[in-house]
Image (cartoon, chains in turn purple, brown):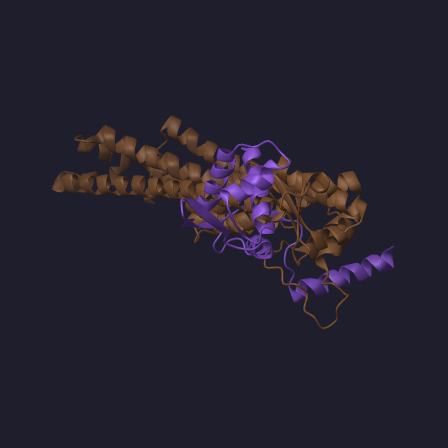
Length: 120
Length: 323
């Protein structure tokens, strides 16, 4: 399970550095250069990413050509958007160290800090 | 039957007086863990009351099916005369419908809570995976965290499998080593305290029962108290001042670029100012502990009293229900 997650990460990294589009063979050849990996493993990983909605694909001849749905910057931005707006279209449970602060709260905080400065 | 009515009455009372009473008792956050316990106990007592009431309704109906006299003797003694007048069958049918509806309502409620829990688990896992993809296979950051490039200062964690702490790069560079250690201790406290599991459950209840403040307000209060719990753990290990400095480093708007608005953090805040005040001047915990204990004892005694009434079949409840 963990290994799989790691592989998905590595495959996405390869796709992003290939400009966002590649066939399974192209990704396999780049990965195989620095680690022993089976072609079918790469194939099923990319199929998984396709099913999870991270990739789209077109049939080109006998093979599929895969495209990333978002480039890396867009993916990170979407992640943070979701992290900061939990409760609208996502129901992930996550706890922020610091949440949003209203004007009132900022004012109250600076008052607290002023008191801290005088009492210390 | 009468006991079931009493249980429902208890849950009504709890739903009305519970939220204001409990939020007052837990407001200071002097003993956040005990505060969470009190809220959870109140929620469980209401849900438990509903469940037992339904079981009793169904059992009563089952026992009395075809024995109109006994049903009425046990349940609506005062209405007996009416029943003997020929309304017995009608009454029994009405009760059957009522019981069926109550069982159905509780069943639907349970199914919706389970569905909401499942959704939140799936979304959490997807988010953790997306965070992993965002790091592009880069080695993990401090404390096994995922360091993500984003224009915000943000630190958060996800429970479940895999447990994940996400730190954005601007947040990482805003913290010194001691502050970072304190932040990580705070997030670890969430994970080891299984706060996500708790919040997933109370969150699901709040979504399914949006009109009952015991669950909606309770969910928000528990989230606030969970932050305070984690603050306390971090403060014990790295001093309260370090936690305060970390909170300020991440909370205050960047001073570097005047005129440009601070990145809008959309996440719900749980009173940063309040947490800072609390860390700098911890509220008196002795008295708070006493109040919490009294409320908790009350939450235990009320259902136990009802249980005693069930066992002794005391008529007290019938008169109470009819009167």
